[in-house]
Length: 273
Image (cartoon, rainbow, N blue to C red; front, side, top):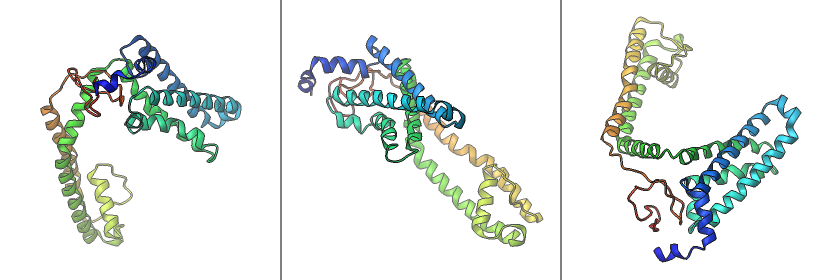
């Protein structure tokens, strides 16, 4: 792996440091300029969706859209050029987002209106964490992800129990109220149960009998407790998660980030950091 890393041409290594590394002077300037371009491109798309602005500045906004698309296309190609494993980066989260950020404009030539999908570029604003060197936020995100992964089975079992309970309550409400009070079928009654248990309460269907109102009151009270359970499960897992220091280094082969501070090899592709 180390031999493969050493064969990278000096100009590619320099380009990689500017594009992927947030701690270098060139990297900071590049990231700030990139974020500014992303914000301006998203604003241009939003303004173009306003009829009055589009009627007055439509040609200028479309020209700006193509200009930003050209810049992002060049940037995307440079990212693929300066990494050792371009396909791995292309299939990564940011690689896919970068690709989706430029595709809608080209699709708009064949499919009018597709350029509205350019708002996907807003996802690229996640790179602000690199610019502001908020490494601690990356660590917190990893802790949250680990907690969610550890609690997913418990939450799924809990949700399965809740869905079963909603089915039973919906059937009971259908039997109690009947079609004459708006509960025309069991699916309609289950819909009422979901709306009531989640404390949304649209009010389009309401029980009219005493027994139905008693059951509705129980469902309402039950809803408060049910909403709190998944939060408690995740909180327990989050409290037990162990935080490890995170580095801002990007792998020079696959451009992956989020490595441990003392890592010597990329945990995704095995290349030397």
